[in-house]
Length: 206
Image (cartoon, rainbow, N blue to C red; front, side, top):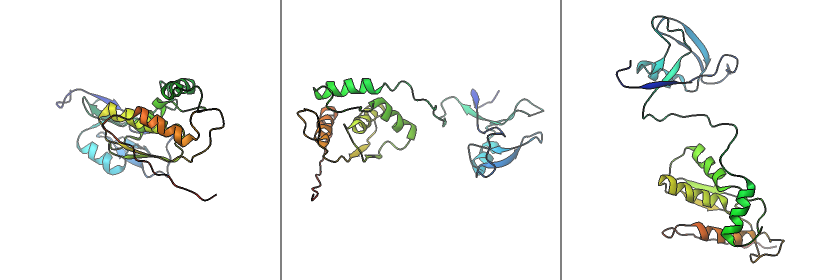
């Protein structure tokens, strides 16, 4: 019945048992019928006051207004969600191992690489601007770099990526002498033609 269009209600608070009285978002609000709700909310008081003023809080049916307050979310609006504790659909380390073997043309030259989809999911969950710089201090086989490349393809982003990897020796027989060399080869294999890679080598005295 809202003249602004169709909507559904989204949770905007923790229940009383899970609420933290010491949290900055722990405060009290009052429904149009005078029912008071004191708990931990997902938004600060200023934002809550704004939503109430805009009639974007659902209090339940008139005239009681006794339902737990929830936010009205209209069709087409973006809203924040809490990610699941379990990340599924991001493949496994076995899939990642087979993929790295395929892309580098060598069997098990790098042990236990992470799935690209897993790191890509972390980028999505972070929900930051599409022109950020993603930094990986322990680059390994370069999964983070490829995840950034794939996410840019997916949403048209212009993220850049900085990888840092010590030239650790690869112990097994391989055409790559160091992990950093392997990482660079993977980066070159997945980068779009229009983009570029810049490399710096830091020489340490040993």
